[in-house]
Picture (cartoon, rainbow, N blue to C red):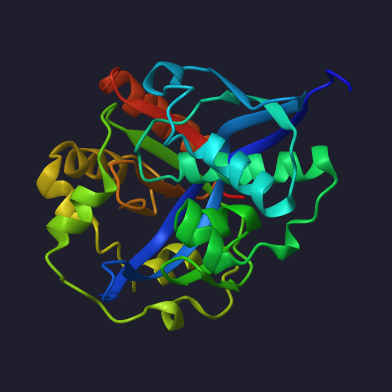
Amino acid sequence: MTDTPLSVFAPAKINLSLHVCGRRADGYHLLDSLVAFAGVGDWISVRRADDFALTITGPFANALAPNDGENLVLRAAHFLAATTGRTEGAHISLEKNLPIASGIGGGSADAAATLMALSQLWDENLAHLSDADLAAKLGADVPVCLRRAPTFMRGIGETLTPAPELPPAWLVLVNPGKPLATKAVFSALNERFSPPAREALFGTLSSAQDLAQALKKTRNDLALPAAELMSEIGEMRSRLEGTPGCLLARMSGSGPTCFGLFEDSAAAGTAAETIRTAHPGWWVTPAPLL
């Protein structure tokens, strides 16, 4: 055995658009979303061990319990071990840089990165894992987080189609420093459903302005119910919209994190500093659109 760790980046997942199109008989909601990823995120490191153990560091480490049976990192590790017949474990380290329950897929990205890291450590192929099984067992966002590329996500997260290439762009992510439970947001939606929106996002997108114009034909259906539960969401969007160079401001996922779309790093960096100065209690970071 070697103690050399193997590390995998877990980028933040951004729902550039999110339409809720209905609900299945089992209660799962049907989604139509354009998902992309940002150049900011957590890190997963693994090394060989006889049993599973998890260590959590980083600015948001205190919000998680390493031995919590619901922790998605450990659930993903045990899931992969069970599906591959592995009897050994691994020591897993999570550097938690993203806010908890923030609508940018932190837990799902961590789970996906854990699957990727362990598959490399154990020399296993993840091709045998079905998207439907991953979505049902680990969460709707895990399959798309394994792809790490712009993707149209439908169903409960298991129906994935590559999206057209996105142009270079930058994001500013803003979080109020409070978690927001996904279940509560979907409950507040009160079955206000929308038709799919994929067709609005086809075509040539040669610039950040083109992307913003295409996205304006869509929305995030969870933004209204989320804002009803947390007033800071409206304030964050207004702050983003009021910064020079912001082409679009929207909430990601079930919130509360909001993002602003910018053309370049200079505009994004200036906007982030302006918002951070005005609201020192908020988590604010610029990041490239991957």
